[in-house]
Amino acid sequence: MIMQEKIRPSRVAGSFYEGDPGKLRQEIAMRLAAASSYGGGGEIVAAAAPHAGYVYSADIAAPVFKALATASFDTAVIIGHDFGANAPGVIGVLCDFTAFRTPLGDVSVDLELSEALHSADERFVVHNQVHRQEHSIEVQLPFLQTVAKDFKIVPILFGEATPEHCRRLAELLEELRGDRKILVFSSTDLSHYPPSETARKLDARTVSFARNFDLEGLCRWQSQGDWERQLGVETPICSAGGLGTALAWAKMHGASQCEVLRQGNSGDVSGDDARVVGYASMLFVKKAADGTAAKPEFALTTAQQEYLLRLARLTIRDALSGKTALPEPPQDDALLQPAAVFVTLHKQGRLRGCIGTTAARTPLYQAVAEYAKLAAFEDPRFEAVTSAELPELDIEVSVLSPMRRIASADDIIPGRHGVTVRQGFRSGLFLPQVWEQLPDLESFMGYLCAEKAGLPWDAWKSPKTELQVFTVHAFQEPAR
Image 1: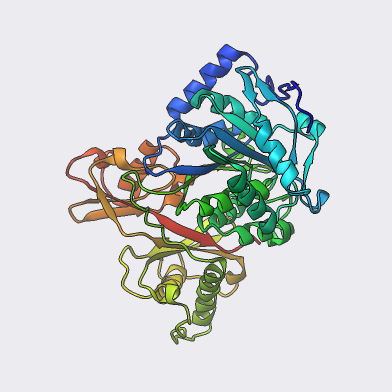
Image 2: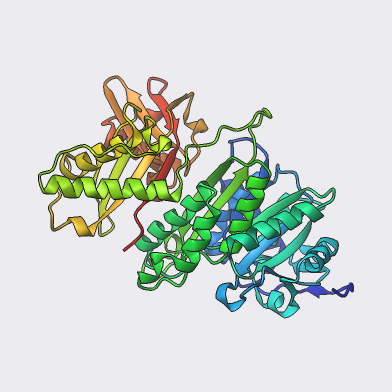
């Protein structure tokens, strides 16, 4: 690379985000103030956030930046859009700009680390014009400039998203970092241009790969997934390489949890649900706030998820034909552990049945089979599923963590926690997925009390009401 003073000018200030410095600071401050605070503790080693225009995605991204205000890093490796089959054999596209300019000032590029990457592997290339035209790195900078001080960036546009390329970049960053404190930041949007309901299903699948640290599954999903059969879908994620590198880096540095802070899509803002782009913001966390190793959340491999979803469908099919035999136990210890499970059925995007338990009494595989059958035939809100409907059903399985009692609703993390309320003999439960329809705490808790528990709307504020929270490992069949 040629070491000389050159600035990459802002490309999308005034279009993707406010071009006036004062107004931009005001907007960012407002969005950060409104964002939920991350209270999970631990060391943040990597993060992911969307890169669309602020009007569409900044509220999804803001919780990540609010959390990064307390993170320790001096170098942010920001990995943007990838080029896939258009860049075969390329790991990443670097630049030799000395700084990236935004209305809030210039952000210095760590040219030393960029050059070291370029020298270490010929699969890195330098192309300033590509960086000059791309917005996926630039849109993250004003937020970073607001929450962090004295940091440099290594801007990378990913090449071909393969597990080997992601691991190689993570390994080189570790090898070359010296005394730098590196944060790997994946700048990525999720599904591009399906209807909103399809986007939510595809995005849930993509996020599940991140939750499970499943790098191979993520890359295979982007390049070979069955999303290609869906009308209007251009891609399920526009930077699998960036997210994959974040997964590889996080795992290398002992991260045990992927915290999904918020999800949504452009239709939530525009009102146009016919053609949307999906978004999610995530943190990858190493250990608990007290310095002890964080307990990993329950997670299943892609193969285990596929087994359980297939089991749920086969159980409903067999019941429709009169078969009642229990499934044979699988040769898999994880599926033999007792688990609390909900099975949810949707038909054409609408709820068709949902039944489960909050107590882990039976093996996971057996619980899935049992509650799939109950959701299909015993949910009192619906008629029993018919054989003609079975091909139209979409099946989702939710595995619950143990319940934890909390002192007040202040301890609820929107988007992450499922919640139960109990007062006397009345109780109700919402899974975390309900935050997608009821994203604010007042509505979520109000509907939970009134619609699920038969309590007054504001009963959750009463000291007489017991509140419990839990997390969910949820996965569903691919969109058809």
